[in-house]
Length: 136
Image (cartoon, rainbow, N blue to C red; front, side):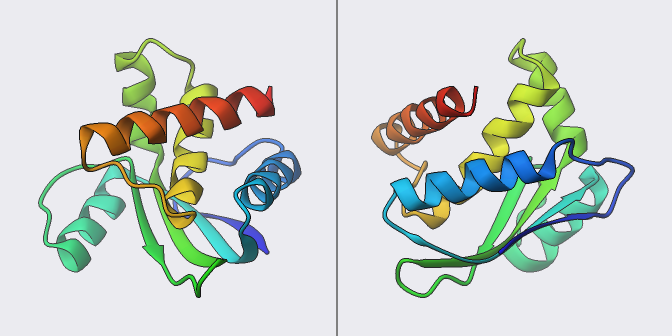
């Protein structure tokens, strides 16, 4: 089950469309949907989580806590709406498109994709683009 939670003045439009898209992505990646919580929050909220749980004193657009069991995906995905807005401007894309990219990025991590090395990041971007295209 996919749920959307809000710790800031933001509401995702078309939650049911996003849920369907996320579910289809999970299935196409040969995984099973468990409990996945998206929490939309501010920079300050996410920064504090980054400091408290990851010992990183930096801003970020997404932090995911993965509780998956094998191929059954479970977790909490925190997204800073502030960072997504800023990144959309920086990358010259719409807020809506950047939000969709970050949303699917979290799921792809749960599916096993990484982004620490250059080759891993290239594959992650390819997968993001692929699923973003399927959404449109």
